[in-house]
Structures are given as C-alpha cells and as structure tokens.
View 1 (tube, one colour):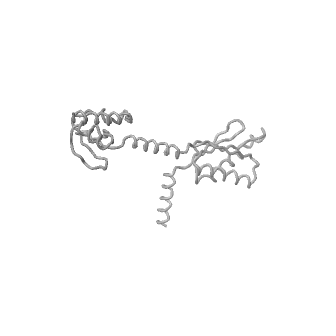
View 2 (cartoon, helix red, strand yellow):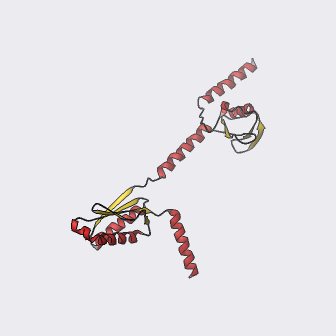
View 3 (tube, helix red, strand yellow):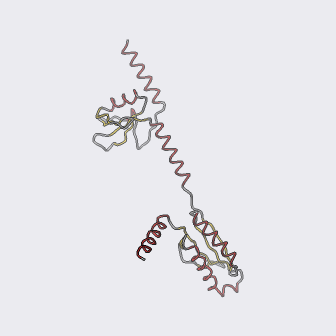
Amino acid sequence: MQFFTLFVLHYNLFSERRCFTISTKEQLINEEINEKEVRVIGADNEQLGIMSSAQALDMAIEANLDLVLIAPQATPPVCRIMDYGKFRFEQSKKEKESRKNQKQAELKEIQMSLNIDTNDFNTKANQAIKFLKNGDKVRIKVRYRRARELSHANLGEELMQRVLDTVAEYGTCEKPAKLEGKNYMAVVAPKTAAGGKKAKKDADKTAETK
C-alpha cells in the first residue's frame, strides 16, 4: 500500500511537470532523454557525477526542475538540472530586447541646387552628418533645374565633391557619383564603429611619432 501511494505521488508530480514541458529541436529535456549514462550538473552548477538518465530525471523531479541535455556530443552526454521554462523565457526576453536595440538603417536624402547659398549648404551638410551619425545612409542629390545647367555639369560635380568632403569624417561614398536624368547623385554610407576606432588608433600613433 505504501509503495502504491509513493508511485501515485511520483506519477502525479511527473504529470504536472509534463504540462509545462518546453522542448526544442536543439535540446532534449526530461523524458525525451534516453541516454544510458549522463554527466549531471546541478542547478547551482555543482557536479553531481555520472548516472543513468532515469536517475538524473528523478533528481530533477525531486527538485521540481527540468533535466536538460546541454552537450549531447560529450562522452558521456552532459545534462543540467534547471528551470527550463524560466530559462526559455529569459532567452526569449533577451532576443526581443536585442532585436529592439538593433536599429534598421534607412536611406535618407538631401537635395541641393547649383545656386545653393552658403547657409543652406551648411544646413544640408549638417543634416547629412546627423543622418550618418545615426547610422543611416544618405542619398545626396544635386539637381539641374534647367536644361542649360546641364551644360555646366562640372559645377554639379564640384558641389557634390564639396558635400562629400564635408561629410567625409562620418561617411564614405559607396559608388562614384553619377548623373541620372537631371540629377547628379551619390549614396554615402556611415563609417563603421570599427573603422572609427581604427582611424582614432592610427591618429594616436601619428601623434606619438610626432
């Protein structure tokens, strides 16, 4: 009678835990693990030794936790006792936070005409720099409003080069500027953080040499 009572309690506890079982293709947990022997790591990272997977599952159940196969290629395979539901929740939360922090780069645009004055030029250039610092690409468009302005294409080229020189610290031109219809255009991409660090390191070396 006592054995039957213990069996029922064990079965009920195991059944309750199966309701909350979370499994993935990469990781087997609980009754999905059928290795003959496994090395077990406890919930507090303590080494519990080598034992059968059934014995390891019993230990997990007694602790009201899960048995997770974390290194199936090891000899013997390694299992950890943990709250797998909580682990997956925290992992999912971290992934969502990571995706949230990953800004999607946008393609911004600034337009200039050949007769742009100095104040407007500075405003447009500063706007481009702001976009680049924010991690966005910038399409720079020099417009030839009249057909006769196309006969002075060199003026558009000079204006474009002036813009590119102004934003050079923050971005690099992806491709050579080209004429499309009545627009002379170029796309500037922001410099990477790594590139910025390298440039700073080179500048520091130059300063030390001097």
